[in-house]
Length: 158
Image (cartoon, rainbow, N blue to C red; front, side):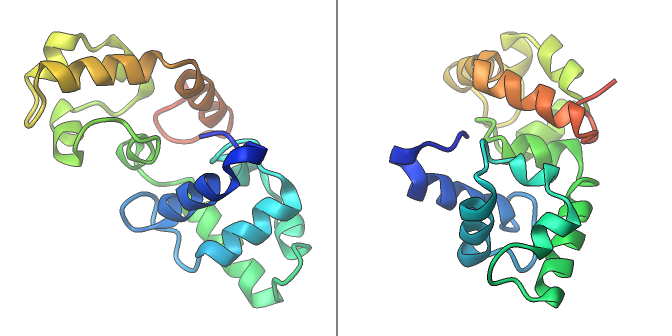
């Protein structure tokens, strides 16, 4: 989830996946775009792009006016994605069907769930339920959730 000098390619790959239809569906955001943004703006984590301004995007080397405007639009559309899409983008160890079945629409609801609750969801046994608990208690995930709340992403703030 966090950029480091030793894992640059893995970080770029995660950004590419994040922009795919499987995650947030950011049209026009391929590897070259993510790489240019990261090299110019030195993202700290996979959601750092949410803090970019339209001027910062426009001043990214290699971006024409039309491209930078498209990226700005896509980033703003991403802000309105559902809580479920954002949680999937955070790589929760559940299927999308199981997450939908949970009925959780906020980080607060997700935190209140017990391992027993997770085990009752489709395709979620004891092992996967334990992984969900470990995932939500991970300090990096907690930090990202607070950061998303500060960015006013649906379901993360009060």
